[in-house]
Image: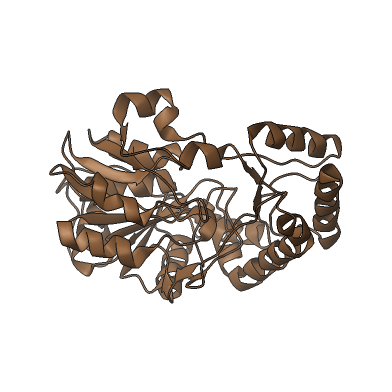
Length: 375
């Protein structure tokens, strides 16, 4: 069986976890957490990166730092994971869903302005498959209306837009290091903070509302409860697992990119025959080979293709059920304008096996079985 995902593993993870244990500091902000934070800052150029227990918690931190109030509105795509909306719903805010672009599956930047009301406080672009949204236009709209931008870059580590790392263009950016991502710590994430003046508030929020970070830097002689907060720090053992992969980030990305390009090369004939559609990466975007997907004609064909590949011992999956059609989406949010593409495209997309260590012969086998299905 060719599984859809295998969590990344380099071989150094056990050694680094042992180091964390021997350092007698396995809770948050140990040596490996600091290594990961430093790596993210150097890789992206963000003012500050703070490793978190999940991308969900990173997004919740962004929502708290924006001081959203009940009834405030946040514009986002419906085609995204539930955490994108949950983080703001927990603050009493209303997710306002806008339609996506069918070419990239990203929030359609041309529809955002029509969704803005007097209650709008933020825009949340989601960089699907590590391919950036049209950030120049999104940032222009945000500046025009005085809105914050929170980038959901869960899938966007080591990807960029016009030379700028995903997660660094908005006020806040959110990374994921879940086991399904290019680099993993099992469960984990990071909050990227663009403006230095917001760093101290984020540190306090992440450290249960205390100034403990300043205490450890020797800036205060004791730490105190100074604001509201929670515990968003991952264990240093989780960070140790992640560090083994960040050290090899270039090699892992190159490995994934080779397979991504091979999928594209092998399936291009079907795309030229208009039997399937393949991912589109705009010229200004550098992606990270987070996923490779194809689009079938419709839901029925996709269902048949999944079953056909399963019989050939290949695991493939579809992706998000649009949030505005889900019970909680109907309860907490609303859709702005017409759903032309969100539902239709979500019913066509099929994600193929993609992970570090996937073998060339496995990619060729998957591609051949897809060709066989369409023959």
